[in-house]
Amino acid sequence: MPSSRITPDWSSVPAGRRIGVSRREFLGIRSRLGLRYWGVLLRAMLVLLPTICAGVYFGAIATDRYVSEARFVIRSAKPTSSLGGLGALLQLAGLSRSQDDAYAVHDFLTSRDALHQLAERVDLRAIYNDPDADFIARYPSPFYGRSDEALYRYFQSMLSVVVNNSTGLTTLRVQAFRAEDSERIARAMLDLGEGLVNRLNERMQGDAMAVAAAEVARAEQSRVARQIAITEFRNRELMLDPGKTSAIVVELIGKLSAQLADARAEIAETRGNSPNSPQLQSLQQRADAIEHQIDVERGRVGSSSDGLAEKIATYERLMLEREFSIRTLAQAVTALETARIEARRQQIYLERVVEPGRPDEATMPRRWETALTIFGFNVIGGVVLWLIGAGLREHASHGGR
Image (cartoon, rainbow, N blue to C red; front, side):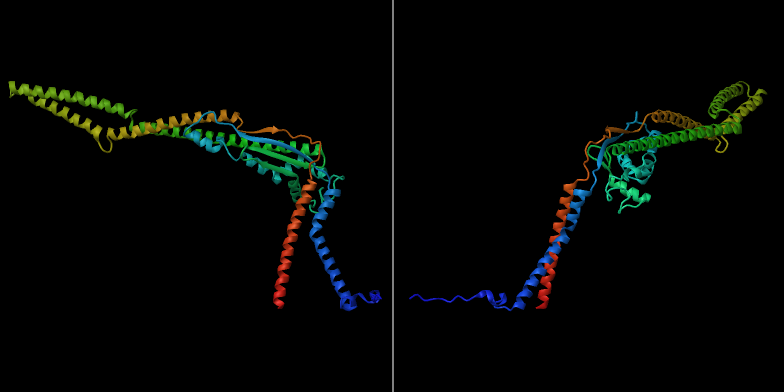
């Protein structure tokens, strides 16, 4: 006869009794598990909240923006000829090739001065305060007020000017909510850049002309001063050319020396023929007079204080200074003419490589790229926070022990 087994009815036994715990303990465990689940979910929501906000904004709220792009290059004209001396000075004054022109235009286009000049040509506040644009992207917004400084910071987010060092090209990008507005602003920015280049040309040409004209004026004053010094010397010394005067004196000394030799020969002849001749005395007196005159003339030439040698040295120095001033004046006049020729040539050019176009499709904002980037940063941030929390819990558990 088969044995019968009695199966207990567990349905009436509380759940806590089945595993050896009380109902109160079971409810406490379930409550703690629920709190931990909601805590993990809440932390996950907080970590992913920026991604969720970005997804909502870029997916449903963000307004399309059109980008107009232009490219240009800054070129410097080579000088027509290389000059030395004053030409080098003129090159230092502004006629030399500059390597920083592209960066000068870049800094100007991103400056407040350029924004003020642009605002005079284009109504930026009306363009970027588009009623169809979303409340975050348009101006003014919760992040940008109505002040000029806020407008400058807002426009910097809509403007991009990048200089390529390898090719020398500068890329200008302007964003706007309408395609025609982005094109109009880009063209106005290029016009401002060309205006800056023209002002730089005018300033360099003006500086070069001013330096050359000042050098010519200085050379003319030096030339006049040297001529006045020569005239004063001639009036003071009562001679036109000490060199020619000294030549006459030397020639006179030569003639007197010849006469002295003749007189001494006649004296010797007379003394030999008739020693008691009454002419000997007059001949001797004549020879003494000629010798005295020779000494006087030689004193005129070789005197250390008032002699012709000193006057000749002074006169030659004045003539050398005058000759130098004449040459300097000629070089200055030549440099001035060269500066005038260079002034007629434009030294710096803004050459447009790509004209601003009117885009037919909005390329900004980059919705998926931006949202994925924010998501990646959120994941990295969440992992970092989790590692920090785990480290703190482990440290607290070791401290409790």
